[in-house]
Image 1 (spheres, rainbow, N blue to C red):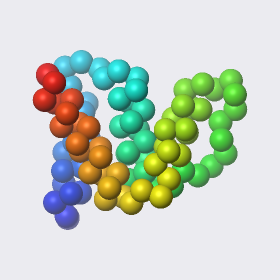
Image 2: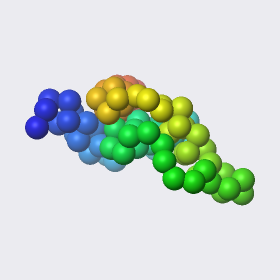
Image 3: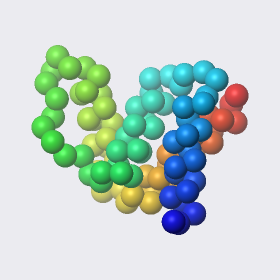
Amino acid sequence: MSDLKQKFEQAQQDVVSLAERPDNATLLKLYAFYKQATEGDVHGDKPGAFDLVAKKKYAAWSELQGMSADDAMTGYVAEVERLLNEE
């Protein structure tokens, strides 16, 4: 397993053990990085206008269209490290 993959998996474990829940903007950023790293470019139908949470998630993920899985993992790890340093 690559070093980046190990850091990514560790960051996934670290994020659940944070003392405080991150704000919604940070959660969306983490979600988008995670989805891009694990599934690639956004796919599926765009959520309807009344499902605001799904719509925001879809939009955040689609902003990362074209980003490589490695870059998305790096972004995810960096964001989790920033959150850990704020504690």
